[in-house]
Length: 399
Image 1: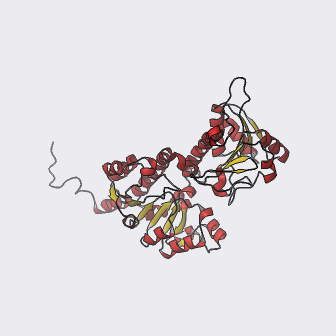
Image 2: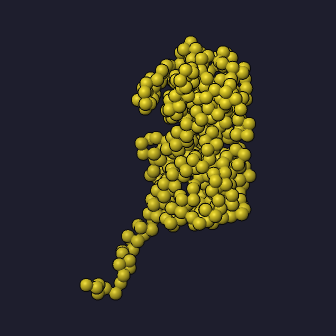
Image 3: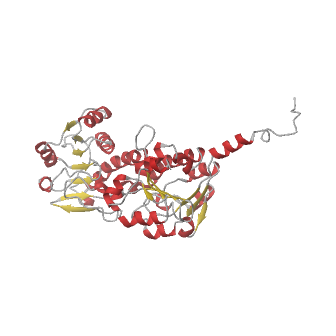
């Protein structure tokens, strides 16, 4: 039976309920600039993720060529519903900037006051002036690597660590080839041929995925870490038991002398501890490979140095060192898909709960990633590192 009311169902909703519905949804206007492809080829969102956000009512402005490093074209983004900008300046005028690398000083200059920045922080590559510039513009800045989920895990770091662990073994395998400075060894276990020996420093996520990959390729693994809890956890995670040890100098030195590949995968609070000394590296096999995955955190090999994708290795004492910090950028499309899965769902949750300012009021996950709030430094460790006064974010909302 047809309704006799002259009003539609939408018109019958009380005004208070309409206001509540309106408050719960926040439209985002997101700018995605092109990264410097010399150091970064990943992009935060895939065309599929862009399409999902556009269908949810959000607006995206993407700099022309932003996806090229990850094999995505402007047409793919345009077909997904994004607007394409030929100028970087226009993109940086968006109220929310989404990028992988932290912005340069020039890029910060293009940003509008009181806008939002989602990017990596990469504290080791920053300076006091970086935070002062953002502060001057009253920017609210959120670091991907600091965001925690409801289980107190770090989803962005976990995804990147998985990739970095797998990538470290594939890169080591390439470097062992005679065509890339190596001794011409094949990574694996060939009948009648000695097994490839791999030493992994650390027992976290990077180590777990490096070990799994190396085991799948037939290598013999030794894992070192000073946490018995982490060593037990990684044993449970691997398909079969491997040799594990705490950092006993004699055992570690002996294992390094015999190994073909050494993977550095241990993190510290501010800097990765230097576990492998120069003397230990001197005793390693000529042509052995060191992949220091934690180089962006200082590195755990005393002989490690920062390198680039263009010149990824250096040789010291006959040992090949790989020290590229953004290791997953080498596999830019896979990394982009992994990052996009996390970032897009995070943005959808933000918008569905009223937008960034609304969510900051109560959401622990978002607060954990904020290091600047409206220009005020709210990350204590950053403040101590750069000798800048910081404030407790929670106290700012009590006023």
